[in-house]
Length: 75
Image (cartoon, rainbow, N blue to C red; front, side, top):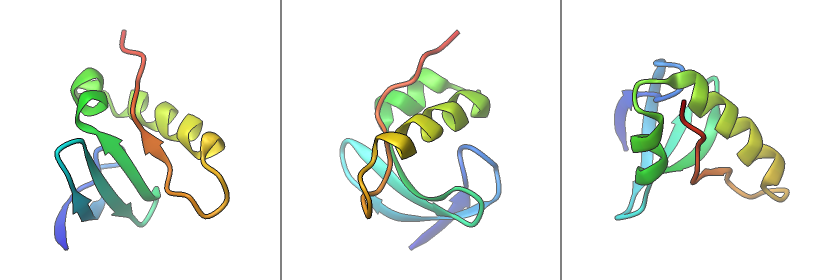
């Protein structure tokens, strides 16, 4: 696993998996979540947008499922 700053908190996080479509992070504050490359690009340098998207993804994820941020509202 690779260490990197969490795109939401900036805290140290681990990249658990990376595919052509998403990156899976494990952050001590956010927990485990996936974010699509498209959502990351749309959010730009706006961690508040990603935090809101993670809250939505958590509520949409079923029990035991990893939340997936695949869309954000920018601006």
